Image (cartoon, rainbow, N blue to C red):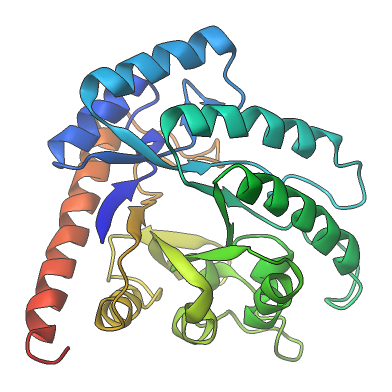
Length: 294
């Protein structure tokens, strides 16, 4: 098992992201945005600079946090943009030696029932993208975020059953703020533990965020202080022999897709490092408590 994180929540620049990663004593970054541009969208010159700095620092990109088929993309629109992104991402990932890429399953169509979501079109697009990545030696992982698969565990299972080779990244925080479409209206929020427990056999990567839904919005917390069942999920993963990555996505000092959240750079950096240290402390405590039991 190894630690990593969305270092764009620590700093905008690659220099700051590397600095935060090294301060934590980690050797991996889950790369998403650099200078506010997703790593797969950087121009070639900018990517060359990032590549050189990562190589010089001895830092690896363990996962591309891509925008492919994410909550901002619509299944009733052409797939051209995502296809172009896949084609750009593959050679960059191969150059970096990156083996995982986070993808999603497109935004939920508003005004339609959970069973009227063009799921066959979603499956077909994901089958094409997944095969392209697998043929290139890259493992795509679907995240339970604001997308079709994020509507509930049954929708995620529907995806992996219909898209050969696709695996899962499980995010502990997303269920806390997501309606559970596996249940009847009015939809309650999801249980992170229930979601994880049911899909865990397909989980090869874990995102850590936590928070409390106050009825209107998500209030993010340090790991273990919210309703994301962080400790319970991580303890079960470790007890089950999980050896993948634990990737922090704090949403405390900076929320990547929320322009209303603004903090000074020093606070943002400090919150990220503190979050990482608290997660490490939790893992040490869990590991110690499990000694002799596994």
